[in-house]
Length: 114
Image 1 (cartoon, rainbow, N blue to C red):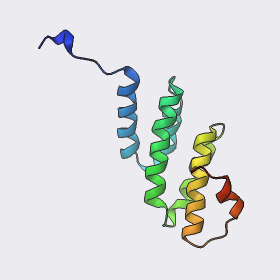
Image 2 (cartoon, rainbow, N blue to C red):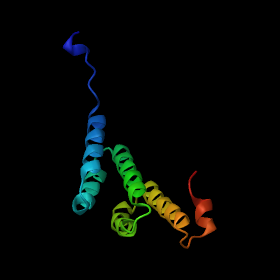
Image 3 (cartoon, one colour):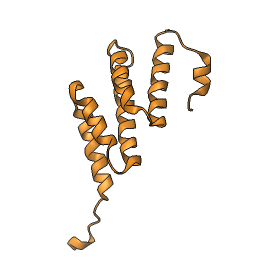
């Protein structure tokens, strides 16, 4: 095999994998700073995708516990101006409300993505 035949991953793929790894390992105290840094990446689509995966992972892990509310309140301001991310957090919060038999509105469910 010739070294020139090796296909190099595009930079954004390398950064995406690195961001996912960092987000998976980040502690609660450093999560906001890391999310802000990831969202500041010049490839906004890739950055949004990495943070979306992080939101899904964290929300699923925290969903039924008391830590969810504080986490959601802390992460929500970081997502302002990013409709897909704010909608995803809102949908996780709706799922939590339905699952825990908290107050929720049927219109919120109808407005959710499929």
